[in-house]
Image (cartoon, rainbow, N blue to C red; front, top):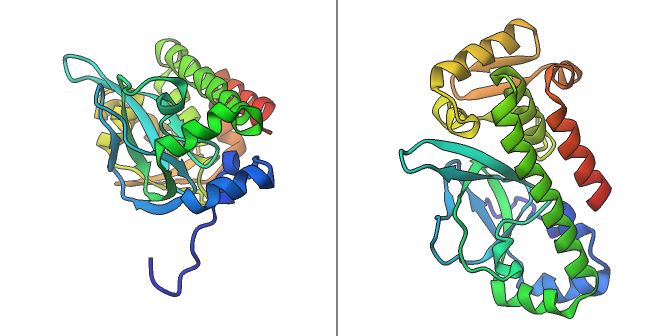
Length: 237
């Protein structure tokens, strides 16, 4: 970030923005701005977790890797939440990998600080528990979606969930990375993206996707996008 660039604000993260001023005042001195590039790995499976991260413009994918190397996305975390829920839910490791899906900024918070706040009870604990419930809904709905719905529908869901977490209609994403997200072969991603492009919903070039028709994407997406969106709205506002 250049010296003249405006520093990121913690309240761009909606989970932090929902906290009362007195709770936010305690956390604010402990929040450190960080920047991530596409593909940066924040957590590895079954290794002790480090700090928590509150994304502002970055989007982080939670990915599970099978023994044969096959990968699939479990969920997304952007400016609505926090990466590293195991650190306040009582665990020290997680079986999945957390990898940056959209490059951008976040705020880092050391785990002991948030554990103290969580143990206080009150607004911080309630906000984190509500977010965890919403994330569990997203993970379970993603599992059902990957099993039951066509690649085109799943791609629409993924694009809409990503768009809800970034300030632009343009997403930088390699074909290989997108295949990992959806748990399909690269050829399947190419065919699905071409179908959406032919329908005038997106513009797809190597490494870049531009959303052209959001209502059209919502119409083509499966019910899973709406379920996840509505649950986050219900629990977090």
